[in-house]
Amino acid sequence: MNALFVINTAFNTGQIVATRGVHDLACENSEFAQFIQKSLNRHVKGDWGDVDEEDKQTNDQALKQGTRMLSAYNDDRFPQNGAATIWIITEADRSATTILFPDEY
Image 1 (cartoon, rainbow, N blue to C red):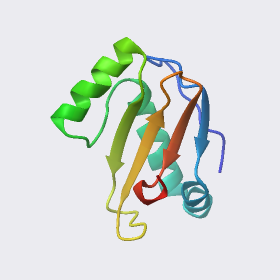
Image 2 (cartoon, rainbow, N blue to C red):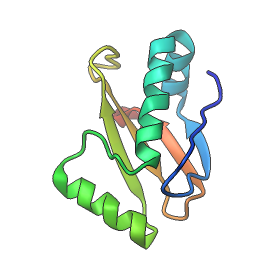
Image 3 (cartoon, helix red, strand yellow):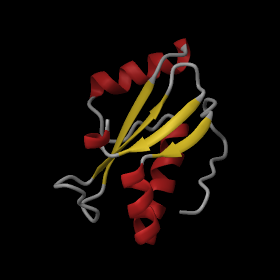
């Protein structure tokens, strides 16, 4: 998997890491790798993706208060264990941002 990069972030991401499952699929599938990059760019700009309104509000508050943020992005082209969703979680201390499948949480 190529290195991920982000520009014009709304917050510090810390180290960007991916779980083994996400990493392996990205190495096998360049379209999935592009989906990850697009999703990460949305996350760092405060576009929380496919979460409900309450979670969007929670993330907006977390952005201001320095607590953990979780985004979800769906793409039906990439079913993984019956799901086509990735989560992106930025830790409260902004030390790391992790890309993972929900079943890897």
